[in-house]
Image (cartoon, rainbow, N blue to C red; front, side, top):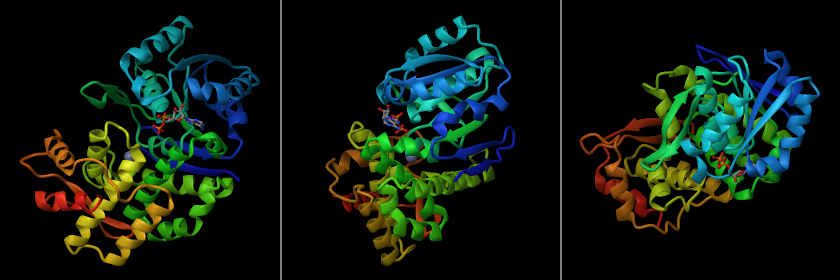
Length: 360
Ligand code: ADP
Ligand code: ZN
């Protein structure tokens, strides 16, 4: 069963195709889009062992010549210096403006490859083959690419839209379970900000996602890509609605960074969604029973909702020292019910602290 989601970004619309087993059909999927005899592939040292052979073979079977660059796995290597050998390989292989570059891996590979594609010869076509649930439902839409800098994450980058995104949900079978749950945090986020019926469906089918039921995962991924695409397309310049995607992330980013990334992104976002929902209850914006439903779904996913091991003081400090905070006001995304959120920048620092204490 194939799902296709159209991402109608103004300058360069594209399709996201979701289909179990797609990994063996990458060649035939990309051949109509390619106007070059070569194809660049960037992957990481883990994905290389698991999936590279299949991707390379399917591309060769279509008469194209794959050129592979492998980067070390992990966020620690998401740096500019790791890209230099990648540029070397592709430039020495005489890539041209029409030579596409495929990203085969998680969010790190996707962001780094997108940046190479945005900058090599001032921009070549970029095709994404995301292999983590997080990259499938989040990084596949939005066009953000880049690398980290010691001063902060994703500080060097460019916008570069893919020509196509090809998703094989079957690759989630090898993904560490903690990474799968982390990706589900973003799915829960999407339902809370936009779709009460989607939330209900996830409550009913969560066990199928956790058991890697491929029919359900395909549906879930398509649904989530659709939500993200509609938000991004409605607000291409990030002036308003797109901020809703930050639900759980204002608290979450601070938790992630103070923990020195001991909490995975999705785990920190899960805690962040609980803290934001607590604040919304305190402000009388949402009822307790919706809060209980949100907490229950996050818990059932195996994500943390309490037991914060960090000092609340240091998390509060980190939140207020963020460069985006103007005159002591932080903008939060708070739920008003399951399926809707609103922006608030009038939370007292006492309430921010209390919300974090609710996680301890
Ligand atoms: P993200 O930012 O999307 O969470 P990363 O690119 O940091 O993901 O990948 C997380 C880890 O999971 C990396 O070590 C990566 O090599 C590994 N990984 C990615 N996809 C898969 C997969 N389908 N099977 C097994 N391991 C994977
Ligand atoms: Zn996120």
